[in-house]
Amino acid sequence: MMTEYRETLLLVFVGVQGCLGFLSDSMPHLEVLNGSIEVISEVPFGGPRRGIVFLAHGCHHSATDFWPHSQHCIKCLGLAEQRRMVTELLSEGYGVVAVSSANRRRMCWSPTADRKRVLEALQILRRREGWESLPLFAIGSSSGGRLIGSLVSEQSLKFDAVAIQGMAIALRSGVDSFPPALFVTMAKDRRTTRLVRALVTRLREHERPALLLAVGPVPIQPSFFSDRIEEVDEELSSRLHKALLEKKLIDGKGWLRHNPRDSQRCPWREAFSLIPELKKHGLSLTADRSSISEELNVAWASHELTADFTKEILDWFACRGDLSKLKEQEDGSKRPNIRSSPASATTIHTEATTMVLVGTHSPMMHFTAA
Image (cartoon, rainbow, N blue to C red; front, side, top):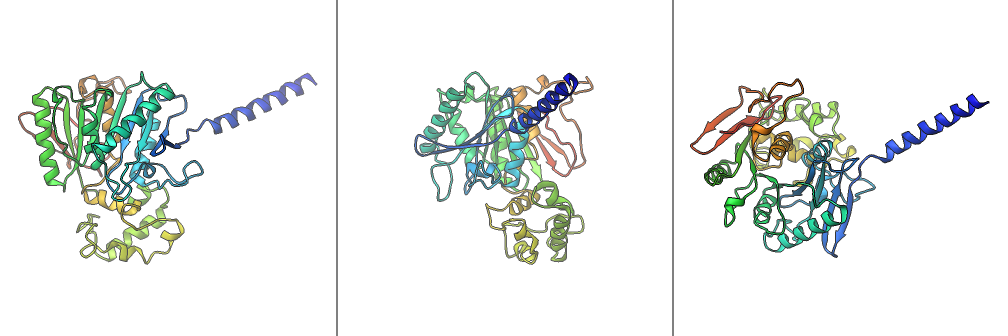
């Protein structure tokens, strides 16, 4: 009888542990602070041991784009690149905070009006959640990058390192105290890349850690969409690839022939509208609300948020711009500055900066410092 009792207790304990394991999964928390500041936050189970990352969206986007639609966030959109970024941040032990811009028409950030709102939101959350002693980082895309550029000069808030995608920010006062900055641009954004290169040079002349990572285009293979979008299975991905191929929108190697934002020269929506499974999977083709549209922009390498180099961004955060401080690899050997040198990677040197141009189809691309 005692043995049976112990076995019953063990089964109950195992069952409770299973329930606790289910309940321990992290969940996003959507709230409105001070009546008008829309904020979403999520921390990994066990807490944000490595710090907090503030995410600033680009124009025509919102904080809700970073998390999937669920009972915890009914208005969330969950665009593929944004979701992948949040997932990786959480898996690496970072808490994530995203704020929506005040302008809900074009949804761009105002460096003056929104700066106060973001500072207020971060101060409330850090105080309320006990995060004030944790490192604070930021990742901003396009207009969000400009916002971060305005925030780093704020005396009441200190960022330990920042990453800015697709934007050449204006350097005003406080260059000597600018946080370690990693800039990510896309190869076809030549003007932005040129401006950012000059920006990196200026920061490094002031002995501030700064680096430019220029991302190359990605070939669209049959598994391209299923590899990057959760709602797309391999069969549907193959059909999308075939539709692009039949319309001659990609060449035999999978490279897009024209800019997917040019509906005349690259009528991909016309090709995909004939595939009924897209609606069944709830996949939109509308610009700025479509993961498919977003991934095509990434494939073309033109002004789009990409999560492909979140690992590089987190390396940058971890070492605060000093790549010599990166941890040793798991096998105990020292991590080289470039952990692989694919044929698609081109390192461009100037007097004060090193830019690494990489193609995201290679398995491992990492940056270097001059």
